[in-house]
Length: 403
Image 1 (cartoon, rainbow, N blue to C red):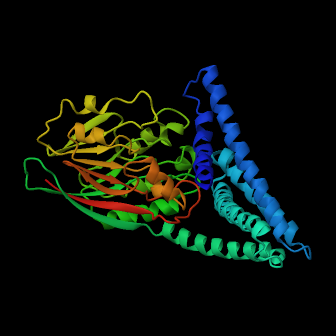
Image 2 (cartoon, rainbow, N blue to C red):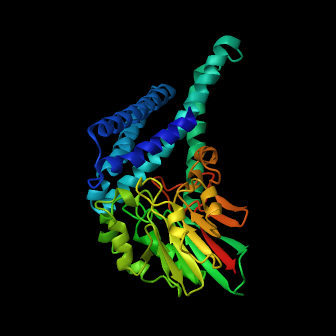
Image 3 (cartoon, rainbow, N blue to C red):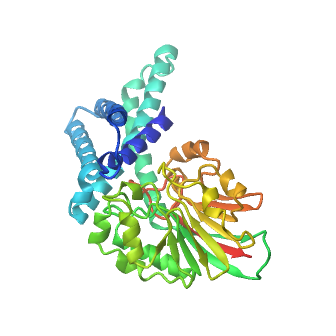
């Protein structure tokens, strides 16, 4: 139930911009199904909110204004979350950022309080039959609530630190193709989600971290922007992108969030204006030494088969593939890809989401070597929504490719 809650709530977040995307045309039946599904998930979310409000209210003492304070903070947290979710991209960036941080923090608290209250109810239900603590249940709710809040606060502090301090993951691979006696230093990043939540300040941090690795090439494996391109433009993120030092170039692809922008390829156009080569079902030969293949996102039904992108390539040269979502990894092997870089999963982002994605993908995070193909699935340097890494870590990969 808990895993389903987190998965379905993320579906709500990701579907919201999908519904307001004007350049995707749906049939009447498709619209009915999508809005019906959205309402179902949103209703579930609100039912969980009501459950957490009621159980928290029942746990607090009647003396003073603790009950009213709890209810008021909960309503404000929910209002902040929904406001930032639905209209944040239209608001002043700083105001939207404050609302997003407040609302997304409350979202995490809501998830963990739900887990805590369900566990408390299970203990109380067991006690109703076993009578192991007949006198202790009166105060049990209160102390369980206080203990849960304490654990949640500590967890959030650690999680925010892990978000704000990305780690560098070093990887060395040897390509199984005719040797050129060369070495390529790649910085691979994904899921920056730049917008009104992750802003220019974080982008400056990311650029410094990238440049500190002295890369030959930088690869951006999708979800550069967090749906809308408007906050990116308002903050002049291009100014920071132009500071990235990569002698052999910067290459990027669309993720699923780029497809939620105001118009087709809006994010790609912006990145290209900053000197980044955006590959949308296309290939580029770099320095006559290796290829970089960029696929359109998996969620786009019009994306080209990988075989059609690689059929004309000289397979004596290394081939690097950027594919945002790590589905069907066997395709890379079948098409003689040497290195695939993906993202999208965020490593599950926060517990227990990390366990969910492990069951959804063959490789949800980290390095994998199958046959002659090397894979790296990044947990992302940025993050979707709540700025907390609980059981995961923000990162960039530094891949030394020998060929």
